[in-house]
Length: 267
Ligand SMILES: NC(=O)c1ccc[n+]([C@@H]2O[C@H](COP(=O)([O-])OP(=O)(O)OC[C@H]3O[C@@H](n4cnc5c(N)ncnc54)[C@H](OP(=O)(O)O)[C@@H]3O)[C@@H](O)[C@H]2O)c1
Image 1: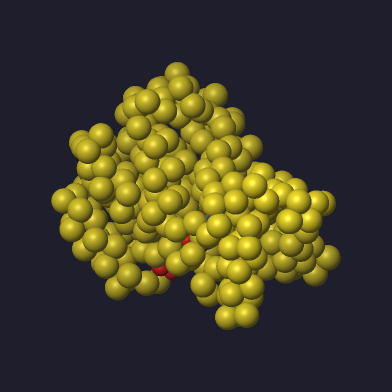
Image 2: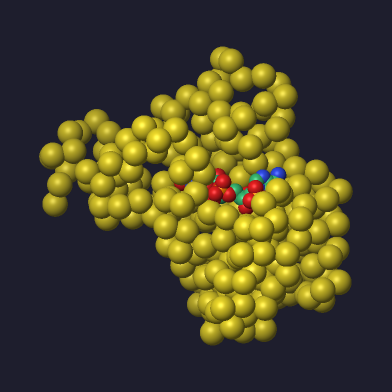
């Protein structure tokens, strides 16, 4: 229970990875603000699961792509908790709506990705820091292949924003070091029970079987609890010297070499 007495806000924590993060932080004793956009029932289900773990929490509806709603959410957190120790920028946005290759993406799709990812992180951090205490932790959830590779063309707008989030973490880390707050990007690998499950069945199954064949050395996709575990570790007191880093939690998937046949890469 190393997070007992700590207060956390996890954006987009009604479902998927955000829920996994909220539940792991709750398991470690933190009080959680659960944010959602549309799925109220799922958000209250997350709250019930937080309580099953012996922790407390609140539910807040807010669209993180709208600065005024993000600000109102942080004001509510301040009113209810009085302080904030952990801010996790996780909310996804309508990914399937802006999954368009670079030569076809429209300006409105590009802007939508920016508003829900980089701009939400900027506004969220600016609004959160005033109530954050020394020892605070800020995390942005990213995706390593999206921010470093270029093969999956429809991921263009999201990938550019994930790269921006990682860069923003470095600048925020320097700006917030005097306050004793660390800022890191945590890259999740392909995770089951998330947006991946909303893909067409064939695409979903093909991705999972690809990972299981060995392209993830651990032989399986991640789970929201895996990512929650990595976030909780970064929120521990012992992680207080880690800041401005991009850390990958993907079962080793990013270690594989796409130029070499898989059979040559088996242990
Ligand atoms: N899934 C993966 O394999 C994977 C891999 C690497 C990184 N990531 C990153 O992990 C994060 C979570 O993805 P996920 O796969 O867990 O997504 P998900 O299962 O689709 O869940 C999305 C969450 O974000 C919320 N949300 C969506 N738009 C929002 C908005 N405008 N304002 C506030 N909340 C909003 C949703 O709320 P409602 O329930 O109300 O709709 C839901 O709680 C994203 O940043 C994603 O890029 C995912």
